[in-house]
Amino acid sequence: MNLIFLLSHQLLIFQNLSVMMINIMTHYQYTTFKKVFAPWYDTETACYLTILFMVIVILFSCAGISVANGITGYHDYVWLPILQIVLCSIVMFSIIIRLIKRYFFRSQNKYLKDFAL
Image 1: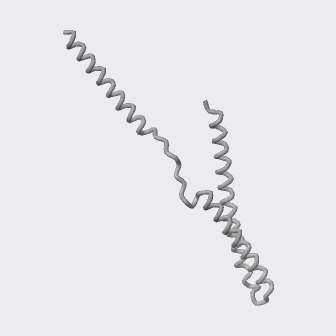
Image 2: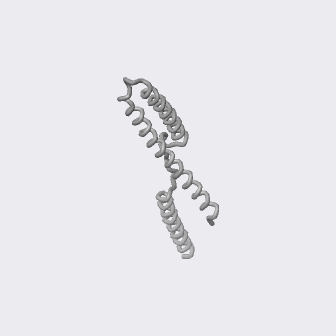
């Protein structure tokens, strides 16, 4: 009788452990933390290269304005380099704001991790 009780008790413990392991496994399955995937065009290198190209286009547009003002037949076409300057400035400032936000969020998260328990 004791042997049957002992075997049934061990079987009950094994069943409880297996149920606990299944619960733990399903819990870990849903609580995985994945690193946020940033697309290639949103990396810091791509942002810096885009800013560099925008500066080059702005300089080219400034040269276009000076040429258009120097030749009387091109005075009507000054609007094109001005439009290029405006559009490049908008793109450049939006990327700069994105980089500044990213820098502050990164430094803020680093500050919070330093004081985490």
